[in-house]
Image (cartoon, rainbow, N blue to C red; front, top):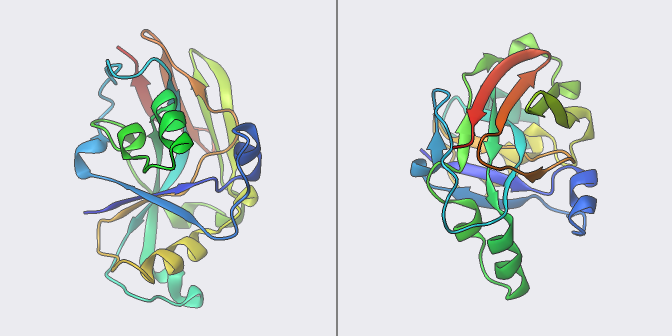
Length: 202
């Protein structure tokens, strides 16, 4: 199983971090050990002092494919979930300043929270609404209507470089509102009003 993540896929999020809006999908990866499942808590890593939440919609690839054309990409995923891409922002800033890869800031153990999946057929993929609350207050509110690169575009683009396999995951990008968490915070993720995700910071 491979975990693909898309950076800067919502314009307002790119702006809030003073990043340029990309002209092609910005892709990085996490290892399977990054997954945090079943509502388990996130233990604040001792190597960062600025851990940020980034709520995302996650696609699960349903069949193998390579060099998928955009018009056929919708055939390769059937279910979506919510995920949190935890980011050690201080480490990321240090790495970016040196032009170095981001893995230490993005791919560490338990950095990819994942909820249960729901059938994509339940949703209007052009405008899926999702939200993250921190201690009961909304901090991120997003809709897929604001995606820079659509689900189909992402599937097609990634498959030009990597063979997509059944069970692979694509974290499709985070909307504006990312921010720090601290020990004791409770994060809750909602997909079209349904709570799918809870993560306590310990």
